[in-house]
Amino acid sequence: MDKPKAYVELNRKKGEEAKKRYEAEIKKNTGKIASFDKFESEQYMRFREGSITQEEYVKTKLEGLEERELLAKQSEEFEISIKNLKTVVEKQNKAIRALVALKDESCFTNEMADWR
Image (cartoon, rainbow, N blue to C red; front, top):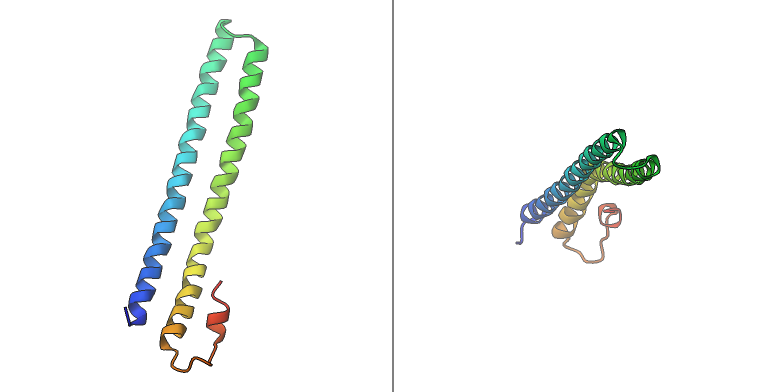
């Protein structure tokens, strides 16, 4: 792997893998939110039938709301990470190119210093 292109390609693939992991987490959170919605609907029907008390229904609903908010916030953070990922990979690729092209070890460029 002497060529910068190989290192850049490897870094790009790592970025794509990270994006896929974030997207999988978002999909998982979306599924959990849908499960909470279904469970809440079932609990409401049980409440209307008289199988559970109003206190039990309200408790279940509040617990579901808290969990949904947490999952929605996590998904939002994953979305932000996906958006930032492209910029991070581009900066890392600039630093990789600069490092591979470096002939004089005493030369240090801005791309190397600012890859994060």
